[in-house]
Image (cartoon, rainbow, N blue to C red; front, side):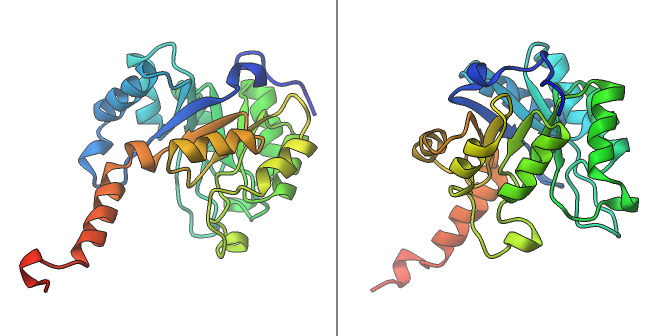
Length: 243
């Protein structure tokens, strides 16, 4: 494993930091690049150490508006021959990096990738040809340790509960954090991402071993949050109809 790229924060600099995932679903009015950039700037102004962004267009918009921001970039794309969709191949890695990301996040599970692309080769090529630090989105301890061994600078619990192997589990991946922290190389940062829905949970993540915490839906997911509230309230019916 090579050394972690010096252009990104060290573990000490990340300690207890909050990274905001500023994303919006297809069809949402929030998906406009300028809206994404405004939410990213608001997050950074309130003390977030960085933002996690999806798509080259959104990465570019935030980079222009917030030139000094720490950006974790990814590109969600679906392929018929693979369940991997978070920055699944070389084209996506290269494009996310060119758009202005400081760290490129990619699915680092053991699942087959589109066109039979190999994870180890993608990581090696990203580091050697681009000099791009990578964040491994994983679903378990074994995949996290493998990603670090292959050369990823950060390991995140992002896919815990979202792969076929972990579909019966619910994030956050609390049990992964202490196990990964004990076994990961000292220079590799551990990021808790997925299912963190309160400040108290963010604190717990750090206490369990995470260097930094990514929060998305609970802060920026207006579409999903409103839908959840509406669903819950809708089940109560009208006050006029209750005894």
